[in-house]
Length: 319
Image 1 (cartoon, rainbow, N blue to C red):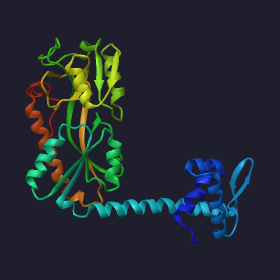
Image 2: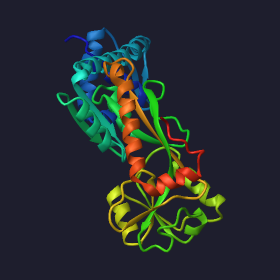
Image 3: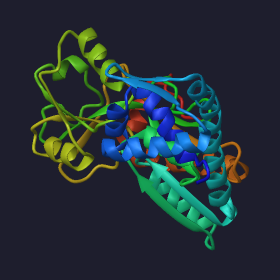
Image 4: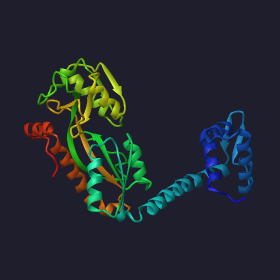
């Protein structure tokens, strides 16, 4: 039997768990099966790797040597696998745009622009509420670009591994029923919603904390917060059960009204990310420009937001 990477993973698992029984649970194996595998590995390596007793398993000198090598080889093998996947999946990026996005009102406009400018290219999309998931898919080569939102000036996920560019910074607005007493107003103080229930889509980062801080500054604590998918948030706002928090460029459907919050206490930053070591990096500047143009198209559709921006010039729209 030749030594394989899976054998090194077993040795590492036993060392980290401190016993064969605990390692078997972590690896999803029966203890007798793991014990038998460990004995075969020890025969290949020429000696015992662990001293085992009722207290658990402790590496022998030989075991420490093997673990030292395993801690170098296993991460290196994983890195090689990820780099190979990125390389294999990035070939032909010039003729393919694989876009990932969170709940972004810009995705449709970006797809439309890419399909128009590159009619022979393949444009595909993947959506997730998790920016972390999308960043991971870009890192392992399953996506070329991720269009995600982050709260205020927060850093996007995997900021040290991926290249990120800001597409736009918008005020977070309230989405209310068209029958709401404040519907049609140019803006409303956050305190005006002190007795309201709220609906928000799930997400990561600091937005929940920033929302709570903004409410506290306005003198109240949110009564009820429904965390739900976008369709449910829209429905709850439509029937008057909750005020939904939404991006300013959200495209309204019948029965809804967009209501900017005075002072813009919450900001949402749209960013586009890609891996700098793939072919996608060559076309990234053009994708950023298309995303910015899609954002401007979305802003122009919202007369309420355009009027609010005119009264709040500090919310400048990137060119």
